[in-house]
Length: 153
Ligand code: CUA
Image (cartoon, rainbow, N blue to C red; front, side, top):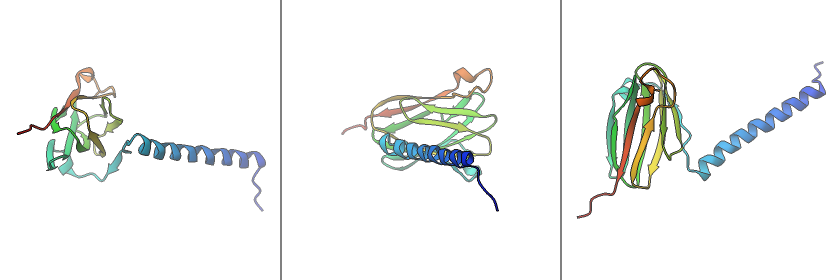
């Protein structure tokens, strides 16, 4: 007969509560701050070709490829109110992917594709910076999302 020690039971219960709190806080933040939880999607070579796809007027896909020491594409022009799916991969070492003023904090990892969705409701220039030390050119590794007002006729 197996008996669980009382103190072990206590530790198990506390762990359960803490795990529950973590899951709750992730779901809460997702709802409250409309932050998308990044997902890791199956690797596909097609995602490692840097490009911008326009799906419709305000929906874009950005295939962002990090390498020493740049992001491609380095300039992403989109109209205000756009929703962008970022697919992130790396050509070499591990890089970071942070968008200022947005709740985006991803890693670019060789052989992996990470995805997140971001809405840009305010015009401006949003810097994408690498926040994972990746070599001598690390501090210059950045790109920009340029959010502009659509031209009115
Ligand atoms: Cu790439 Cu730091």
